[in-house]
Amino acid sequence: MRRSTFLRAAAAAALGAGPGGRAGVRGPDGPEGDGRGGSGGLLVAKVRDLTGPGITTRFRMEATDLGIPVRVPDGRMLFVFGDTFEEARVGGGWWRSPVGLYSDTSRLDEGIAWSGAVGGEHARQLWAYEHDNPLFTTMLPSDVILLDGSLYLHVSVHRGWGNVLWAEVWRSDDAGATWRHTGARFPGDAHGGLFQLLTWALADDGHVYAYSTGYGRNGPLLLHRVAADSLADPAAYESWG
Image (cartoon, rainbow, N blue to C red):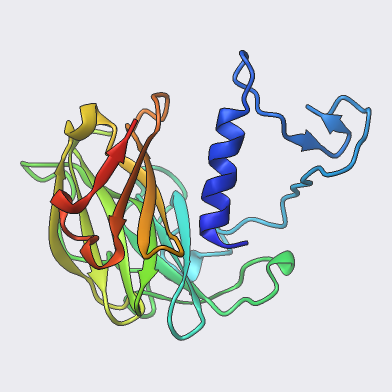
């Protein structure tokens, strides 16, 4: 499924939600798993864990979160993770965010197998900064997109979790191996604080469309679009909602 199709489906599901906030998505035993059965449902089943002890130990990342996938130009998949530690607990040493792992997996139904990490033997932070510095605490990824051979990563900058100072966009021209700041920065209170966290996809009309919200993830969604070649220009975004 194309990401643009996914975004359209997500919007339809949200608009179709009833008063209780439940969309009309059918489970394996009918709506809400009520045992009535039915056709046209989407069955989702866990394949296996992606990270953790014995899985990502060799990358010194026993604890991590997120895991945002993107296909890079050479055909591999890159997964971008947030706060990462070398022990299996929060605060368990060598704090990094964001970090990236590569996979050559072609059969997703067999589970993801990791082939390497950004940084070499161990998963290193995608760009250098100190956590818990005088200005901010950490930088967390929202979504990553491939445009014309380059990767663009939206991240939010936090002073304490959820207190977003600003969001920004980083770019990689070498499949995620190195990153540089695009200069794009969005204040934490942009759009009433609803541009802190987003997901985006390239549409057939040459625009990137994005849904954004606040970092509490309990607020409304806004819809935006921007010409693909202007992704790093905050003034070029058109917004609705």
